Image (tube, rainbow, N blue to C red):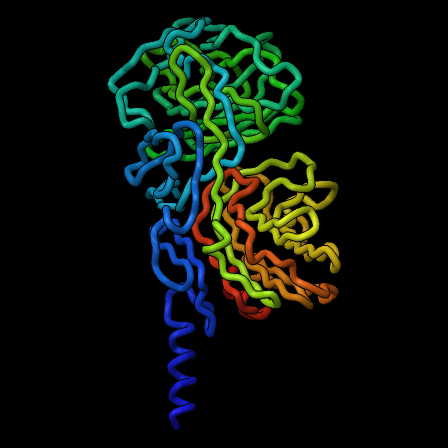
Length: 434
């Protein structure tokens, strides 16, 4: 009777927390959405559990939907994304790639103009201040542009973006400077991307209150000027004057990269947001030489650039022949395929991969993945879908004294990260990734 009671209490303790998969309570928990952290099975704090670094300030969105700036090395926890009706806490905003806003002035107020006038009405921008710029046509016909004269990034894949809101006129068009090629059009009334030139990609991110962050990425290099055109129709660069009708702009950005990154304000010179790192010290990590399980969820931003490591959610690596990692691939026909890997110096590389197009490239792509790693197996699951286990491993790498890099190659938000020094089983990783 005492033995049975003891076993019952042990089972209850193992599965007592909200983070447990039935029968298995994780020793390590980072719940960035709810500001809960655990190591060694006991509650702790962010700074005691994980090391964050970023050698610059950076912007994020708070619970009110306002863009705010945090200082050097301050983690961007509590970052919110608009879901169409409310601002939702998505956890920690993490960008492993440094980006530079090449535009010396992110406000378009002083930019060159053709057929338009600019002013600063009493309209609140995403910054929470009345610093939006109204761009309105002042001609009956013809081009209606506001633009920066400098040519940027010849031959380099580049993303141009701005926050925009309809104010009597509905269309924003990004264009080159010869009036013959429109990169992309954005309908600011319906919140939909219009015509996009072949080979380019475009995106609209809802920022609430009629504001959208509109971005377009060039295929082979942005070698023209940053031009924002007011238009009366899709795929055009002209609009007829009608009083104060126009569009509102805020936060122009031009950056080398295949996706838009967080907003980088500038005032007189280009500015760089440094790369971020999230490192979990080895002393805080659970480890077992035969069984390990890991779960992670969040939202990632990535593009199909045809490389093998498009996103690497985490990397636990001693050296080139001893590691555990999970990544997204877009090489060849493997676009949007999650791959779970482990490598040990004698067992060599063992992997399992999901189907193609599991996670299509875009901005803020939701993901939930889980994996089980063992000395005789490896398997993974995504969004509750189980893969076929690989049973060829002969050893698990010894990572007992190795730090883990969270979000090693990652642009987006991390909601939760959990680790067990146990085998969750196939059923467990399915549940963990659901």
